Length: 401
Image (cartoon, rainbow, N blue to C red; front, top):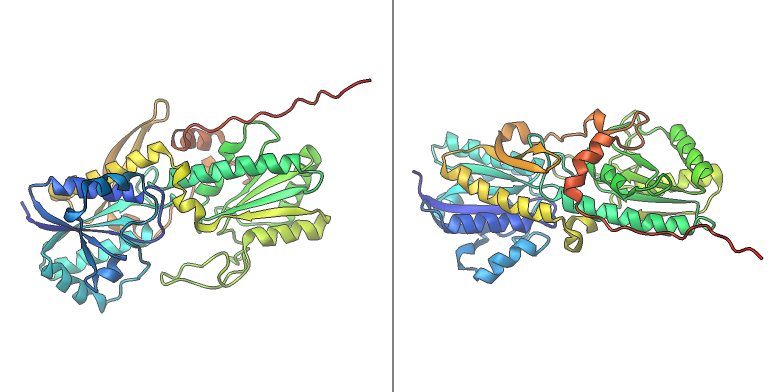
């Protein structure tokens, strides 16, 4: 068996549970007969090339244990896109620290990084086992039922929309509408998850718009008008990646990041929520609110899903076990066996099938109008979201003289 040291890094946006995966890798590596030392990249591959490397084996046990319930990225993250000139530098540092087991926790772009580093080392006759550990709140990784980080961010969104909906309902004589925007560049999983907040016909959210469908301004305004006529107000949830039929972002953003992804929100344009807000005001003259959480939901540990925390840890454990068995160039995957009772098993998927591309929601998870979800999606979401609070409302029993 291959013996040497292991390296773990975190990349991209943080989550409420990414450190739980980190803890799983550390704990399992420390007990491995093939791994001598477990190192951590400080600030991802960018920091690694500068030899900013933690000796994780020297961390106190209480710190490693505490990672399972600590949000954000404890190692520090990076969005550096690896260039051809970086590979010799990376290989030199790998050799210097005798790293033979290479783990990265992240999303599409991160899986691309592992895939390329592992391939380069193979061409240079340097034996390295590269394993990806899934992480993204967007839930858009191919090859896995869902990704650690998604359930907790979804739960945060659900609770936001639940509470914001109660506020908007009670304030409908002042504000006729509320628009809630969530992150989700290419897929609508997070926006769709807010449907779990709706228990009664008039509960929020009434309308959900996801990047899987082209945005139609006229249809949107008709949907809004119908809801206000029915309920007296309207709750709208939208994904940040919403686009018109010609590909133009509804946010009007034109700025792109290092991976050529459009930067939505404050950079390079307005936002989807503010633009939808303006459409309603211009058409109907109503007063309303917009709510934009941006990255706050990504590390909302107070609302973290217990299922998410446990699965994230187990993904870290599984990554080390796969590497010990000789696997390389794969990502840990989660396979759902059943919804009731909720059962999963762990598997693996080739990195080349995961890297770069984003996984949209299946058409069957939406209603026919494309402005809400189907019962199939609710069945998918329920085990991940966990128990939700139950609010009451006053019955309309008016006084009589």
